[in-house]
Length: 216
Image (cartoon, rainbow, N blue to C red; front, side, top):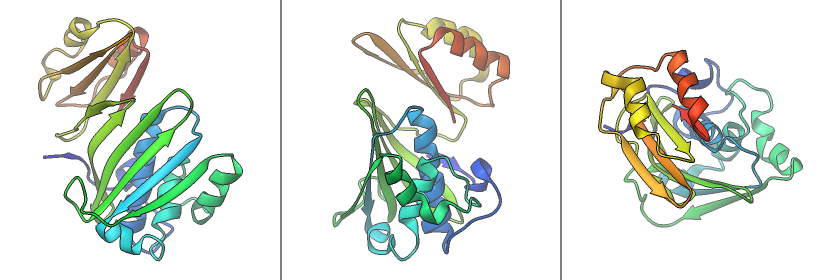
């Protein structure tokens, strides 16, 4: 099973501006996940579409939908159709690419979304699987690749020192799968797949010892 939102409305509300749940509402959700994962000012956005998305993104409003998610708009926001222009007015470079090849994550409605600034880069591979439901099948954060291969909740943690033992103590029996740890020069990255949503006090404990933390 992949990292799946039951619906875009689980994230950002019950009303949608746009013609298609798959190509508009799902695209908003993919952009919104990227916004939450990047968690920093954005200088450039590159959207690479595959298969059905590549063929229909302009007519179905996918472009403005995915950028509105990147900007943090909800689907009912009246600014959604203007999102691309608004991003560019904010100094964000926006590029759309129609890739003629097959989806690298094996779904016809695939968007590869890259967010960049001078210190950070993030790429996510998101699929809109119908009815506003999306799956995030791959995440590349500054060259470190995670494949969220389970349902939510999933937590990404970045720290300046090893905190794996402390994380194990905080979450105890709440792990759904084995904790994944990646060490790179000067920092440690962790992916935690949990059985149940963490308590607020657990989140605060982790934030107190981490450089960055994202809860999905």
